[in-house]
Length: 466
Image 1 (cartoon, rainbow, N blue to C red):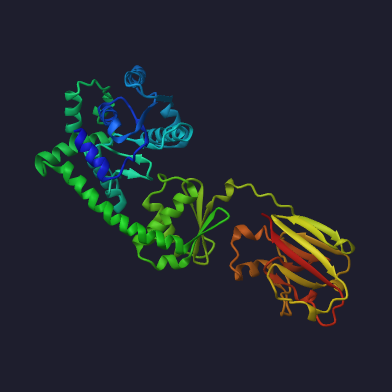
Image 2: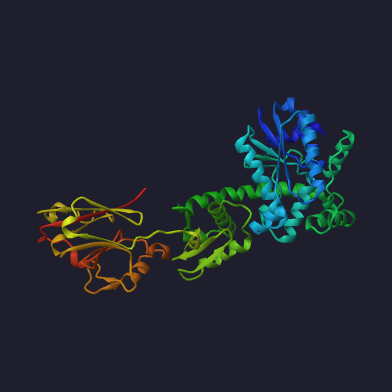
């Protein structure tokens, strides 16, 4: 058995010389088998081993007996042992998760805590070939895509490894007998109140008896083929993600051109963006991805809510993913007023911008490049009576854009220029005597433009604060 596992470890490059392996140790047959095999292979692999046990506080006295068993095994083998207790029912209620998902999250959070604070670089879990078969059937019944049918990966993120995924449950049980080990038995594994247990106790035995006696190995072979095919598609999807997805101030903008790609690429790009913005792999289902695909076909401004307080908005065909604005705190100072005679070398901080003002006396327009940048604009200082103000928009705001004779609503300008709704209330409006002279970075007004007859010029520079 050790030779089989050693060969599997080497073939899949799971462990390197000098690795420090943290074993997820429940005390049950699978994890005891894994721990014992790694202890016996420790010198050949030149590794260090530790064990981590999470007490879910679900099984009364038995849970504490499991905890004591784990401690004793680790002491007997002189390996470090880390134990934590988490009330999984309370955890599940707090985070609105199933008890199974809550347990999984709590375990991996605990394992990561140990990796971050202790001298370990990999986590070994005791999934076996039967677990793989059960996982594939479980996902198939619930509904899944190609990645889901690939089942459990032998290695994830070059950090989580499954060294006994090559062993069947029968082989694990035989190893336990041969080594005269006495694992803890979780009685809940035999209760048919859990769907996974029903698959283990009813469905797989039925398939073995009536269709395919080797169903476990058949599903494991299939998973390897699917994983290879999926890896190829994932590489193409990653190129599309880098091409079409842009991160802006923590939000993600999916370019409309993405949605002309094949569905298999689109769905993967959208899922990756959701995972990145939410920092969670487990809260999004295909229905959420399809909701975003449908959103692409809707009118601009349409917004949908997603799990993890994420929302998606159609912005003229592009899809913006962002943390829900209901959970954001945005501090906006409505207005700053200055006297005309107090502008020289003035710097105003407003809504995340630095606005710098300076007066260029007796300067000809011929000496300036009036269109050098959207962040630098020049105005006829002599037309300003007394007050310069910086504020955000008000309902009904209008101004006369450069080159036009009539006024236009600020709202319509934002719509025409495809400015996202959540950004419109932050954009500074520079006003002279209560008239809007510049929608900062966007449009300037006709009535304060610099001409050949202008003698004194007001220069305004707008910069984003770091």
